[in-house]
Length: 434
Ligand code: S3P
View 1 (cartoon, helix red, strand yellow):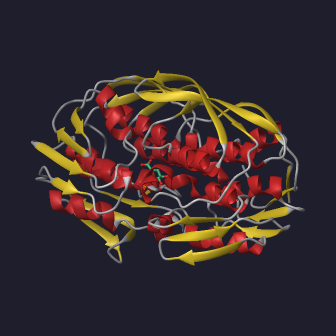
View 2 (view 1 turned 90 degrees about the horizontal axis):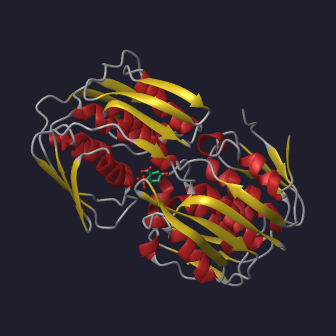
């Protein structure tokens, strides 16, 4: 159990070789696909953070059995399309991926349910999934027609859909794809900007009838999923914290082994390299249907850049730590076209701007981005507003701080990276509990 408040002591270097816990997005999908397959799937190196645990619990509530043979690997006794009607409210806690994807699955299976979450999830927009699912024929009600609880009332007579995503969101895309699996006919989902494609890659492994051409996905419903053994790559979004740690630290370097390097996720590496970071990619290989590699990062001199809008989707979860890199760079870094950051576990544009300013960094805030002027971190106290990635980003910032950074409201680090503190301390970061 992580505590709410910790101190990160300023300065120092980091060195070492580490592995990351399993990728969060892929872990959720492995649990979902395994539950929907007919037969026994095996999942290895699953992220056992609170978000994925919430997904597992949701499927347990629908009669799926999980048998653990280690803390992060288990068998899933999938039930095909015969999941049980949940009898109680399903609480997805902090997890946007869980609530949005499971809504699509429940609609596809014509199960009614109420899906809810914690204070943060209750502030996140759900109309984006309700709109296409309603177009398919589902009756869904939302609080203020946008927020959880999501009440799935009836999805009988569901029909295939042709849908162009109005927002670049892998969660919306995946929700519609999952619903389409159970509908007769061919559904077509189009993206304007490519988002992470783990759902498409994994469903192909599970035998779904799905074709991807450029930014168009065609799903022919009605095909039963077969069980698969999945080994989950290390999470690039978690690795990003230690990649930046190595880059901004005064000495040393870090090797992170077995990290997922899906091209729809690697925007942060491109951005950091453009800023001048030295990042080497070694030992590239394929694990299941996902590319993985070892990543080696070294202390580097960073320069401010104008971030290409086309990289926003593929770096979407890495902006908190990219903003820390920008604060350590020479000159200004400009980000625009990133309005979606307002809809994450916190409003990441506002939370990051506020906290960077508290530590002496100049930030200009826009509706869809930030301009950050590189400078020096003072010691001070920040409020991560229960956002795991904000808390971890400021822990890393301490490497360049004059004194101690105190980080409040940090317990949610356990949603995506339960052993963050152990890894950080192994490398030489100096963190301590309040
Ligand atoms: C995710 C998609 C992204 C990302 C989130 C995980 C996924 O969200 O921010 O952390 O697993 O599909 P959006 O689809 O809202 O962009």
